[in-house]
Image 1 (cartoon, rainbow, N blue to C red):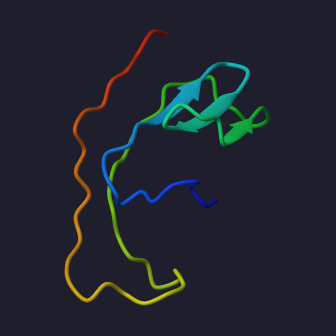
Image 2: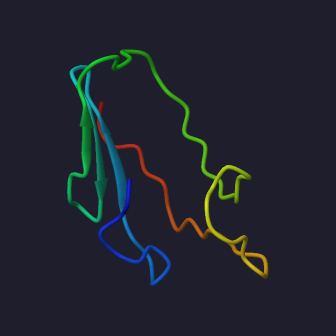
Length: 77
């Protein structure tokens, strides 16, 4: 899934909206994906990391790169 912006150009908000009926993915407030089948009704864990897996196409970065997370918030439910 390609983002409609350069994710490296600055901070962005990435929202995962979970409901018993669906899960939505909203980068910067724009819904890019919605799943309505196979949605769990149990609590989930959130893991945040960054890596360059061997299966990813393209060239590996020449120097180390970092992901900075400013905040994580659980809302409602």
